[in-house]
Image (cartoon, rainbow, N blue to C red):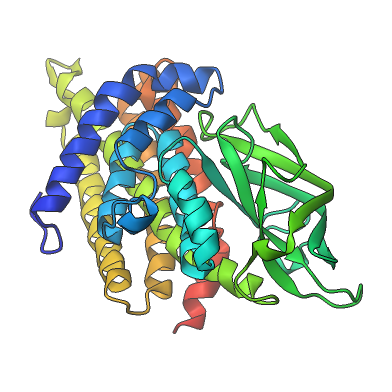
Length: 380
């Protein structure tokens, strides 16, 4: 791939992750999806590849690569299976990134080395049953009693929160002592020291091989020193974290769209009707051309957004645009791919059916398309 922002190291990483995804993930992706099965084995193998903590400095066990390298890795995983890409994206962008950015030296030294191996996962605790797009509607409370936080509340739709590899969660809570006021703070809640209930969510339409959990906190206790950053600054930290998270969701959309396009192109070249491959009919060739145009534009803008972040320039607007646009083109390309497959694209034993389902979350998670337009409008 020739691109002004892609260097030799980026290309090597792309090839490495693509070969891994084709060899290790693709043969079992459909089975994992059919069984709604999160694979600890695949997760640990991705850890051995260095995909957890990919942007974290080496002193904490990471690889210290740039944002674009990380996004390329997520893109290549999603080209084969969005569930595995989601595991990587949620852990890196939402799980450990805020620990590295806002954590104390002690917190980083204690947590990050074990969270860069693939043996342990960390979650991002924002969404609640009554707080989705309206993040300030959260009802979870954390009251400081002596040297402990006493936590009560619920979180839902939390990726990487309920498997045997889940090590904990960064929890957005109301820490105000006044029941009529809200003070949003983020607290690191470690599973091995704090008692909270986890329940895997199954029978999902999307990301069926990713771990999604429903969490309940009933007088859950966390040490006072597990406050992340400053008290009362939790909402700001969480929303800033979502800016970076949107880049990784955009990468999932881009990778999914690329995979769907490649499947559609292969089928169009091999499917013979009226004495020739259907790719030779202008209607089909135009569909493929439209797909390719959308992919080129989405990739260019996403990589540009990564460049902004890597150069410490404002990127929130661009991240929102990338996430919004790639989620839309993923939907369009997956839909057209199914159309090219015809009836063969409607069955569970065809990968394109899984891709068609998996794209649906992209316009919902980490900011709905409607909310993202509001975010973008505030930058205009």
